[in-house]
Length: 234
Image (cartoon, rainbow, N blue to C red):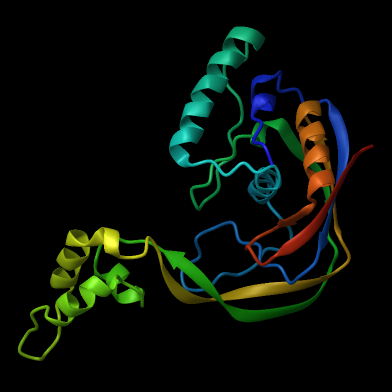
């Protein structure tokens, strides 16, 4: 799928009324904050959740540095071409900033019945530059195994966090970028579909229609929260 960002540089009117239907194909866990040791699910997606789902469906896998550059160019175009000085930027508590949050607005969400709630362990991916990273990952380059075993210990036979941190920083490229941590998380099982009325930019609607025609399978909340997406003008 070709990444087309041209809709971001057209007049950002929300001139279409649409209905978004989200059909859950698996249990969902919708979290919008950083709760700590337990991830409790919301009953319905936030706007940031919808932004992420739309961007994923359109193949917009864009890093923070590139997003900043795109926002800078958008502001220049909006000011010069449309006399728009400022516009809404949708940012979530986990640091995700959407490129298209200003192109639609939630008018009315209809939430299906939640028939079950349960807790399960979710594999959280973390990244640190200290001893937590080294202790958290079970994988490292085979070249480091002997060096790790020979790290100095204290009189109780333990390796200090400071020693681990130094070892990690000196050999960072030979460790995985992320380590995993099993985290308890709430999941919900729904009977029916989310039906969400939106006011939306016409160019975004067309892009979503084209994307859903090619591949309408996306995910919501987690990468295991598979959903089927349908969108239509009303």
